[in-house]
Image 1 (cartoon, rainbow, N blue to C red):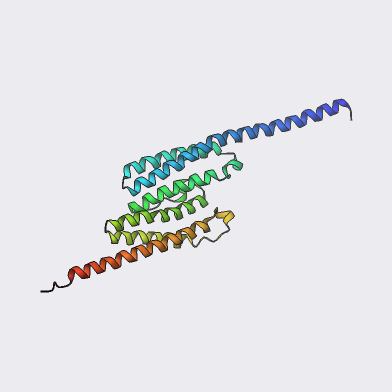
Image 2: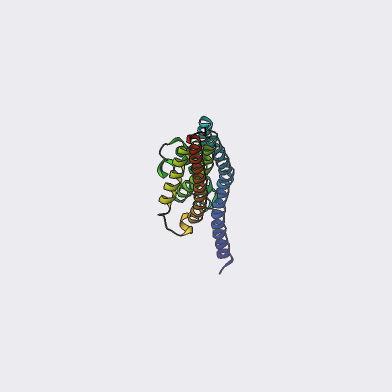
Length: 217
């Protein structure tokens, strides 16, 4: 092969590498936008859930709006970069967003938004629902401390219904991003919550029986 042919081959190879380098630079720039954006989504969602537990619904709603805005920005930045989009941190941010929206809906008594409405991945939606059900334990215990056993029973029912619905999803963890493990954790939370509620109901009945018993003369 002539030296001229060698030079042409080298130039062609360099052009191919430059094209890949350009693509990687674009992917890296998207990652630099997405990482802090996902952290901000997770922080805002965590704060929103805490506000719901404090019954500060206006604050919770403001925080979840902020989370949604940041999440959309991240999703837009990662559009066209599947290798970064599926790295895991976007899934975590979407999962936390679903959890915040679901906790708000559960406590408010409204319908949980669909996966289409929330614009998140399927696996993130399912895991977010499971973690929202686990998060209801805190709200349940708060209601028990206030003596609102009826509301605590409603919350346990919501947790049960969520677990039952999600238990119908039987796919490998590689597809569901570990939904099975999340459901195992939810089942443990359910059993502890059921035990707490049973104890509270028995104590209430005992108190009512004592109060209604005739006073000795």
